[in-house]
Length: 458
Image 1: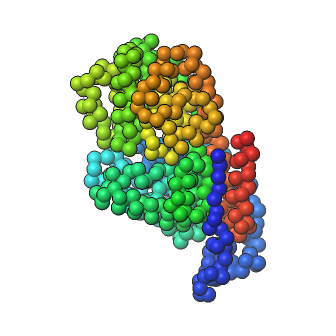
Image 2 (image 1 turned 180 degrees about the horizontal axis):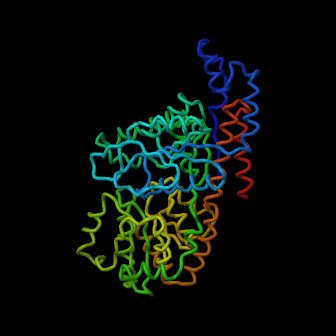
Image 3 (image 1 turned 30 degrees about the vertical axis):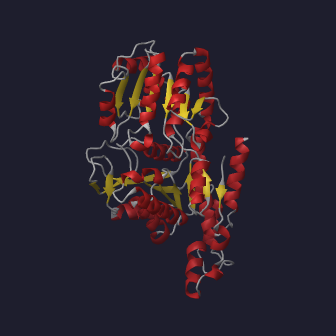
């Protein structure tokens, strides 16, 4: 499952290909000296100790609290686990007016509203001088979670200002979001592919959550080392929900104790394919009239989706919960019987891991990504379309024994997504890029990371 790709390594280490006047600068940039053979004593000592000392990591993200989405959850989980392991994580994110206060070292950058009505902001690339001096200048690694404004800030500070490794996590298959651009889908898709390729190839390492995401990057001529690290979650938060909390969610939406509940947690947007679940649920109701559909999330299609069901058979059977705070979300999973996942645009689908952690059977549209997340576990069913989803939902909701068995498989499938395990692999990536940047290896660090990951997964 884990893969590492470093086709660029051989040619990037051959400084003979550089013009003479750039050769010394390149060696100084990558090895800390103008000679490969005469590295400084200080550089060698730092490399020898990098596995033993605490690191300082700057995390740059285009979205952060109070926005609730997969990227925010991923960045939060990583920062939390880095702290638990004794390292210091500094978060750099845009300021969001009226947002809740965030704990930890979170440095907000000025931002402007976007033309559309959205919580998302246009970041102004400004970091306070004291924060650059006291925090950024002391970082061992800069980790970017965006390839837009904050991503290019991360690249500038890593590659030009402070000369430290740049790690990039590819969270989103941007081609699938081209419909938001006024430039037209074809042109936008082409531009995002070029942007992704140029940004990823400027990084010392790229992290993706699935092989499917890695394959897409390779198809776009990304030659930087690619490491597959699933996005982690706090599994215990979803496993330690009391029955009273689940019952409270049902009461809040007028759902009976015995009513079968299908849960969908998603941003309500075009690329998430929410109408697929509506069509499947409408079909399910004809066979199971007491079923209820509970939607958690908000987005640009929310009003249109509400209008779609306002006059039909779904009106009394569908509940919109809106955005839910992360601390309250586990209770919604506990209140459900089956989880529906219609999206085909995810790099991983963090909500799949959450459903698994809650021991909730999943019915998902079959894609390479969801197939990879499921693995060998029979944690529900992968289906091709809405009709098959309706049949799968009925098969699970009408057969308690089958549903319980799928829930047990789901619980087992959650294990690789426990936040500490992915964070430890991210730390291994950090240490490897530091060593490679210092000149202690020729890409072998990534090979050893791959070997360790493969052995641990067998």
